[in-house]
Length: 121
Image (cartoon, rainbow, N blue to C red; front, side, top):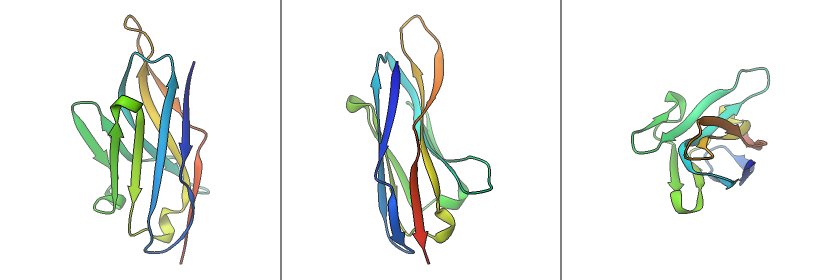
């Protein structure tokens, strides 16, 4: 099995910063993409930032210049540094990973349980 465990959410004032972390554990051959999505009340889940191993990093336009994604490949961990937070960033943030569990296998999508980020005005 594979687990994604997030940490770092919380309540912060507008203009503040938070750092989210997500560690993947279990039987893992390779992680081919890792990143973050978010879902605000009444809205669909949307991409925040995803890093595809060795190729590219994609950010939502709404977070470009404010959020930074990074990975520690040795620890199967992804981070999201969120600066200059705005009330509209309030959402549940979900860790995402595209993982191949075995060398002969295929990639599957995995999700964390979500962590609440609340930005007060």
